[in-house]
Picture (cartoon, rainbow, N blue to C red):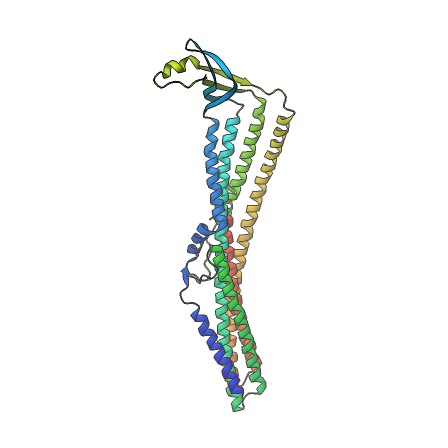
Length: 436
């Protein structure tokens, strides 16, 4: 009965391995850079930021309208309730119809700087939208890298657990053989069997974690969540070559987050200029040409029928607001407050960015120390497992000693995977913070 049970467990685990290997067929192989590029094309945050930038570009183009003349044309026809009498070409003519045509031109000469302020608002708005696009791309890149690292970590932990199950199988067979020979107790055999069951349960959880990480990464890439993926990369240690002080100074000057805050300050200055422009007179040049008659001109006598009824005028218009119910005063004071607020916001963004770089750098250093420690711990655990296995084979160690050594070895490998994951994620966060 015990032989049948052991054989059933062994068969179930082997079938599990084969089914897991079959699922790896026809997977889409991508590098991390490939994943980032796909996400930048497909993900909603990146596409939304791109569309916002395109919108800001067109608004910036519209900002030139403040300097260019406006030209309008209109034409109309209407019918009166009563006849209209008019001397037309020396004759008294009546008609209920009225036709008209008008062409108007207007050019602003001076409006207190409002045209320049409006143009600058659009210009800084476009720059701010560009910074938003760059920030969105950096965020998408970080999220995708983390998604790739999550999948790689899940796969590595799955492989560690699969190896643990294989070791537990070997230990179960060895315990069974020793029990059959009378060299081990039934308790040893049962302990090995329980360990195999526990490791198999953890393997199921780890396999589910791989599937979940794969689906999450697909979602980040804008792909179907069921798309099979394989990341052509490994979680490994590559030393970060960066001068933190130099990177910080560079980021505080040109990072999109800082540039966006700087554009916000520039926009508030332009808004203040725009509000103050209401205190100055507005000067503009205008010209109008109009025609009106009770009949449409004939084509063969167009000049004769048109000229007597057209008119034109040109001039310069000056206007000045004397009292607007304190509207201008309130807008100026509000704009001044916004300038002060955006100055503080710029300084706060600089502090936040410096802190983010500091935190990321500390995380990188912490990751380096963890990798060194986990490497040393893994070597010790591996050596201890070998010694304990040899002692167990010679009968100098108990099954508990062997199982404990095996658990310590598996824990050390898991810790090494986690340390590599934490380090690579910290490097990605440092790159985002410094806009590398």
